[in-house]
Length: 163
Image (tube, rainbow, N blue to C red; front, side, top):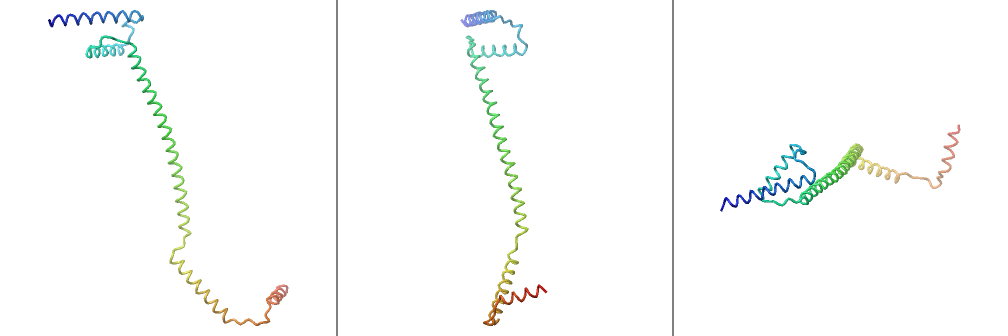
């Protein structure tokens, strides 16, 4: 019984092989036309067919598989191009930000050079307040005559300059 099943499987495989040979002859393809790499791939394909018990070879499946792989390749290429463009955009943004940072650091350094420390500022403010108070006190003690005319003083100064 077991031998009979094996014999039937061998016969079906032989007829399948003959069918494939006929299909190749119809397409004007000889096995000698293939390179060693192609023959190795065909051999591996035949092994997979035998392991998976696939006996109906349909070229549409192969075309579908090829189209799917080609689509994946194109999509991957498109993704790489998009990522490369995005990377260039990011790198240019980084360069622009770096230039801005350098410019701001120069501005900060220049501003810090011009910056007056708080202690010096408070000392100057105190001195100015003291000077202001002293001038106000002097102004209070200064007695200006009622008949004082600033125009007459200016005329005298001008006449002195002309000499």
